[in-house]
Image 1 (cartoon, rainbow, N blue to C red):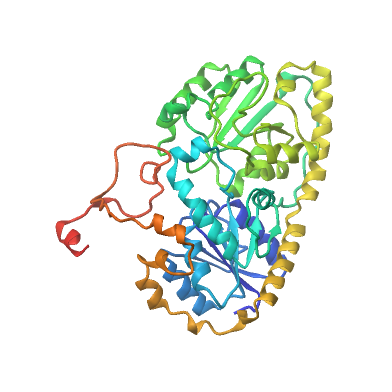
Image 2: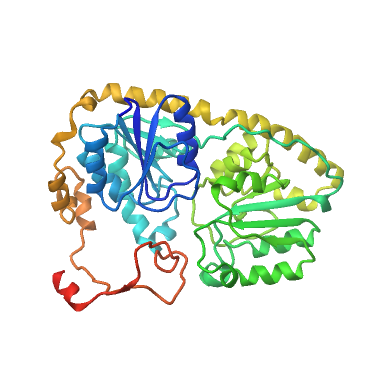
Length: 451
């Protein structure tokens, strides 16, 4: 095995994993991807192998066979697997790469209504303290350090990079009516989430843009619905009545996303909770960062950023690629077009600033630093007892290495669901959202007796 082999472990591999792997490969690393769900991309050239796993013991068995120099764990609000690996991989460095750091991110009201996020804060705290290194997407480690009394072992601040592209700087826009605005990402479908009162959907925004005589294109993320035509029926109705101003598109794979959205002029980042022309009531975040910032930059698009997404808004202003939503709607046309062209020119500088190969070089140096500090990294992994891990699936949270607060997370009652399936289509539910890849069906009584 290549002496510079890194194991990527991810529950939902997406653009971040693919971009970082592209940069690391140029830096001489051999990347193997372990995933529990199907990746959101189909181009696997940057990975030497892609392997599906179903349990922590699967990952540890592969570590014994592969002997990687380092493990890089990507967590999407699920810290259980990361906790297990940090606790059991004593002879190999573990880098934690959290999708978001939950601590201090959400409002108290949101956490009180979403207990799983509140409980995850304890798991997150353990992982952040015990991981050999932290590879954070944004400025969240700074917020964490400032707001908590935790001293992190070590960290690196690395951003989602942008792959080098030939950014289109042509300016054939003569008036606002020629402008095509695009949004790509998650959509909280209004009719499926009535409790939000439309505050996280995009119907209201589409109507505003149509009224301003501009075009709006919407690309929902791949995981937000089960039936495109049925779930987005309200959007399809608006498309039919918009006079060609609104367009709802079927999702595209991540491999084709940048090319697809680069056809447009301006991108929208987030649901725009806090703009002068709109009063928003539902907002769960104290601060926020939208994933698509780097995809939009890569596509050469100036960005309409919501001030409520404080980290995103900070970067769009710093890089001079922001266009205020109210200016888009209400500013004098000549002034706005000058503002648009200036922002467009700054996008190419932003792309160079976030060049994935520069960022990956920093990450490669960080890997080597962590490996050097963990002198036992080259020790044989034969000491990892796979059977012990398999036997500890239920009781692992009671082990002394975990903080005592974890005892509150160990269930006293187990509910057995005898059916895998549901007639409802709740998008936040793994079953309703159709994220579960296992075969649906009914449990037989003989199977229940085994449990």
